[in-house]
Amino acid sequence: MRFLIAGLLLCCSAFAPAQNFPERPVKIIVPLTPGGSPDTIARALAQGLQGVWPHPVVVENRPGGSQNIGSELVAKSPPDGYTWLLAPDNVFSVNPHLGKPPFDALADFTPVTPVARIAFLLVVPVGVPANSVQELIAYAKARPGELNHGSSGNGSPQHLGAVLFQSLTGTKLNHVPYKGAAPAVADLLPGRIQVWIGAANTLLPHIKEGRLKLLGSTAPQRFALLGDTPAIGEVVKGYALDPWLGLFMPARVPQDIVTRVHGEVVRILNGAELRARLAAQGIELLTSSPAEFARFVREDNAKWGRIIKEAGIKGD
Image 1 (cartoon, rainbow, N blue to C red):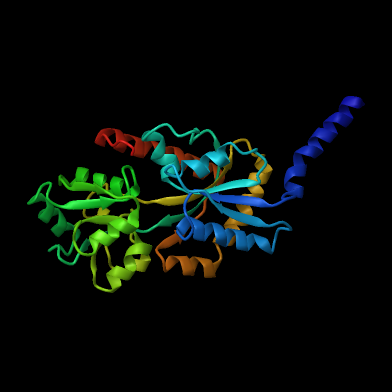
Image 2 (cartoon, rainbow, N blue to C red; image 1 turned 30 degrees about the vertical axis):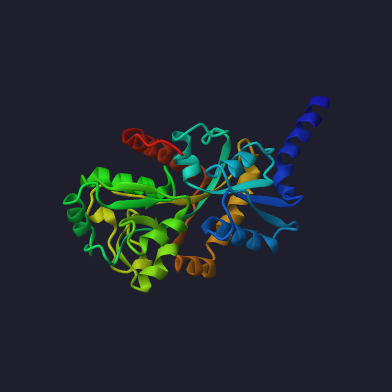
């Protein structure tokens, strides 16, 4: 009888976490400075949960260390579901191949869902005589090593996007790394660098003003926001750079808590107003099951590991 009672108590305790969750404030760690796409989405999630949960959801920005500082904080937090990480793909797919992060990107986290993919664009200043991807390829091939492409650092999405472009097109560009996208775009506008692959939300205002020429998008499919602008992959077979953001918790969080968080987050991300508002910035919200997301993260990690190794890219 004693064993039966103990078993019933154990069974009941297994259901308790999700039934009572959350019993205190939840933190969403963003390993980047305020104002960017991850921060915007994290704050939208926090706001969407305020009217549903009895306790606050707080967004904390923990930038630094190529996003490893904030990510490590989550990786080493208790697996109780109260600390989340909303982070870009390079934390999981790129950084592990450029150094030794203070955590295992594939083993120390519980993937919950992707939350967005970010439109990345191939642009050139108006002074570059190329008006299409094909024309840029021809122009670069006639001037090997003469055109500068910028990035926000070694191993950044901008760098990897340009490396993949050169590998598939047989072109040779000169890499100029910057400490962030803002100073690079400042040099791009007057033509001090001639090729840039970067996030749409920072480039669209300059494109609309006629200061930059939009040649293509980097995702496998076209973005509706960009009208008839082709995907680079339509011209360059096999080309795809599709930066994403995802929501994670520490490894070993109880499955029922993961399921509850997943359901609430998906509900918020499917809101029509939020989707429309972010789409105008080149941010496409998307979700999947935790199992599908975990499989995708492993595949993306392997893909970029091969590219980084073949290109001999080293971290800063």
